[in-house]
Amino acid sequence: MEILVCIKRVPMVGGRISVTPDGLGIETHLLSFTISPHEECAVEEAVRLVEREGGAVTVLTLGPPEAADQLRDSVAVGAGVAVLLEADRPDWGPIATAEAIAEVARHHSAETGKPFDLLLFGNEAADTGDYQVAVRVAHLLGLPCATGIKSLEVAEGLTHARAGREYRGISEVFEVALPAVISVKEGINLPRYPSLPGRMRAKKAAIEVLQPAWHGEGVSTERLRVPASERRQAAVLGRGVEAVPALVELIEQLGVLS
Image (cartoon, rainbow, N blue to C red; front, side, top):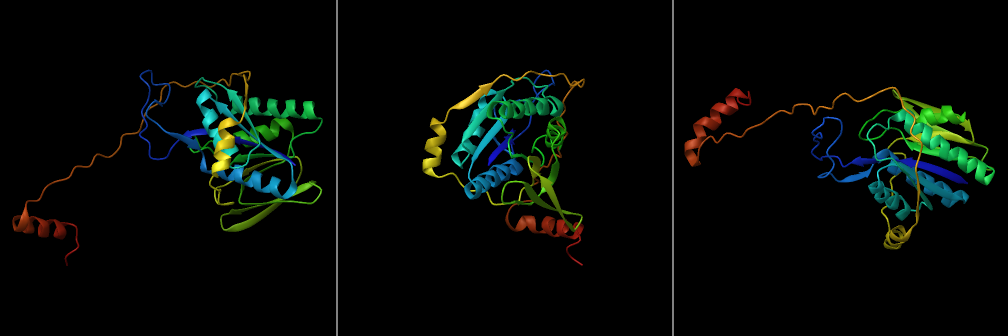
């Protein structure tokens, strides 16, 4: 079974976001990066499927050279092949990204004589949350697509897959012919921690670097703005017993005392 998993390099949650002086990008020098949580689960699901069915997992990302770190993280937990679509410019939106991924899938099919059995995505990226890339890739390749998936089974013979999800309290199950594109949500599994041998293997792993063609999307960024955050300030009520009257008054204002 051949599986392609597409991941994205995103800032770690909790990092302070600031905009570059020109207002067109995110200042990244002080940020740490990781893989989107949904995509961590996509990598884990692919590795589990290959462990059961045999085959190989290829992990792919589009981004700057530094995104090789996230590819190595995926290799450390079981991915076998890593591909970096090197694209160090800020205007790669979902349309251009989907075009680049679809081209890799087409090249694989032409080179090996058969397509990937599964293309797995995270349901949405942690930074943009646009939900578009998996659906656009499926459309470009003419493949069935299921999104928001939290359970996945592949039938014997690799002819079809059963993908389940919860929607507004209702369980839905889709049976899709393979090859197919599926985007999974966090919670479909519990991603494993990389082992020491896995980390060592990832450090030595060769990463295939490609230069994808950029296709303009007709959309441009005018300016980015970080929303104003609420400023909070602490007030000293006093010291020792002198602070008690002020403390009681504050508690009364909060409605704690009846």
